[in-house]
Image 1 (cartoon, rainbow, N blue to C red):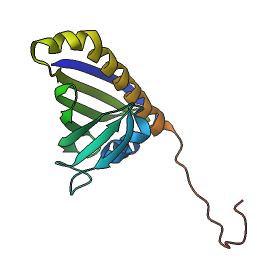
Image 2 (image 1 turned 45 degrees about the vertical axis):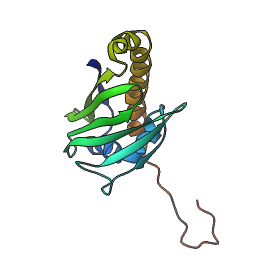
Image 3 (image 1 turned 90 degrees about the vertical axis):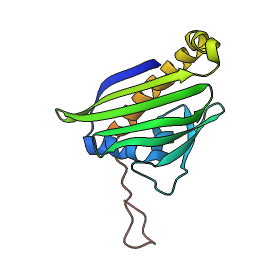
Image 4 (image 1 turned 120 degrees about the vertical axis):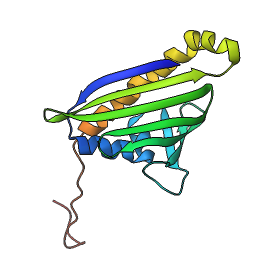
Length: 161
């Protein structure tokens, strides 16, 4: 299994980072590799929840939540993805000063039998490393962005201030 790792500090409360990770469909907001995501299970959150991610520029993958400790840990197992035979992504959160420490890892194995490790070294690892780094930095950027609030005028005829 090939590992990818990230250990960063996000200048946002742990609850904010957790909310982004726990909302399985929000991955499309912060991961540039994901064009869209949809929940495919009866439960949208928690252990056993599943999602399908439509990837850029093409393709898709499905994942199932295999570990869930609110505001601390979420683990997603890749059920189907090409060329991934097996993959597990793990996101661990802890407080770090006024922010959140994110320790993230992804372990994967490539299909294609004896050629799998060669193709991983030549192509797949580089692509996944780049996507993984962009996803982690995208999560940081999205979590650190100020929350948008909408001001609604009390009289619909009046413009908002």
